[in-house]
Length: 186
Ligand SMILES: C[S@@+](CC[C@H](N)C(=O)[O-])C[C@H]1O[C@@H](n2cnc3c(N)ncnc32)[C@H](O)[C@@H]1O
Image 1 (tube, rainbow, N blue to C red):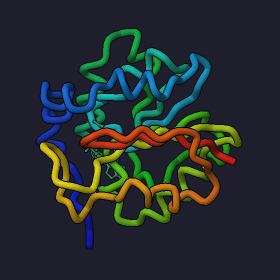
Image 2 (image 1 turned 45 degrees about the vertical axis):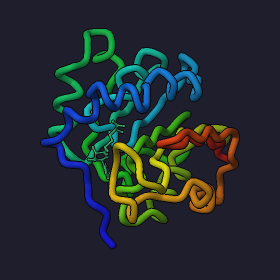
Image 3 (image 1 turned 30 degrees about the vertical axis):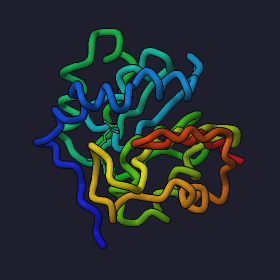
């Protein structure tokens, strides 16, 4: 089954009131607790629901998305300070243009369920993170919820760690509609 990719034409839904209520960006940011020296890549960043607030808390955010319109929207809605810390990168998350061990953090929010080759995706995340680096991974609970992708495309919460043999789970937060993992690269 090839999962569908969120269409750039619907990108307003990524930052609307319903989303902000269901999945506040501030909560994800506070639980991830990035430090100001971090080089972070937001994979499948969309139009920046997380990349924008993370750019204020990190040294730099490499904002990666396969769709150019998403990155254009992100940059046009960034303020002057955020723009200085955001680097838009149009790329597939399964083939990242970054050297091995070069990143302190990877963010993957509501995007892993869209990746067809999850094995290659997980291997890329593990490759680009330095030992001790962190991965903040958020995705939808595999059940009917008010918002989100078709049920058959969702990833069961307890199946996520099995995709990442070179990372350990530091924390897991489970909510009604989504879960948030904090992984540490071994
Ligand atoms: C549902 S949106 C989530 C966007 C953002 N992370 C957020 O939470 O608002 C998923 C995004 O992931 C991107 N995406 C999906 N698969 C991708 C891949 N293999 N490589 C790069 N981007 C991908 C899509 O283009 C889309 O912008």
